[in-house]
Image (cartoon, rainbow, N blue to C red; front, side, top):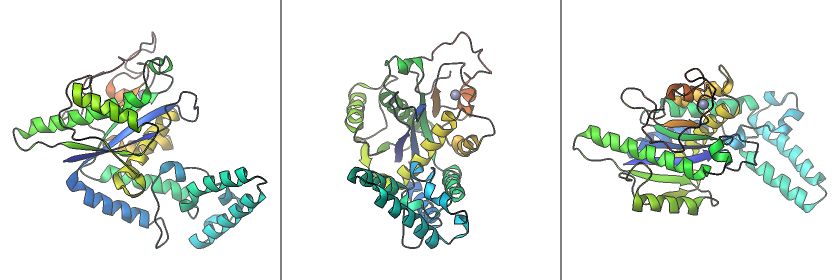
Length: 331
Ligand SMILES: [Zn+2]
């Protein structure tokens, strides 16, 4: 059996200008891969935290600025214990200086998110991200599926497409197509089925379950759902290694696209660490990742490989991609 862990990066709300893309990524692996991956992730996390502590690998919580670290110019020279004490002391002062209960509560909530990482410098936290991506990159057996939706795409701004619905549809159907392809190759041997494990997101859970039920009953836009079993299971990423790693992957894809897919950028290097893990067929053709943006408007590595980048198709007149495309189609 194959497991598919999925998580999103960015928000689907067009009004949220903090993310230009809504990205859903699925990390697929055979059940037999799980033990080694779990062990390697725990070893990686252990090298970034004090003995007896643990943390959830969640990019938004450590790939950010921790202002209190900047107040000591020698912060990087301190021990982990002293760094933690220094940041904690500053935070206690800031909470105490808040004049309203709401202000105090808000600060506590904000600090709680980054608390597991306050002993790591910004540079060390960047390295943690790189090491986690490297883990995905080098772990044989992992295959990725993703949909990156530009929130400025006319199909999205005209509200003809719901990003959450579209992304789940694309990732699920690509995973099903991957399982079908493996089934075809097996020439009559035992068939691999798939099971979905999704990160808890109460705002989208019921819609996703309804969508999945419709696919189970009536098929998805490109055919029957043949190999994905049961219903999607929702889990807390806190203890689930696949969900923590897919969070990192979705973040790397979104950051690459949100920052303009600049060649040679830090974001491109991070994206390239995992790009080869997205599903391709035996001829190397990319099926596992799409950048949903107007054709000919983008020169990112995804659009280049899918053959609809600026360099391949002249930028004018701008045409939109088909609203939906078969998971194994070329465009
Ligand atoms: Zn692109």
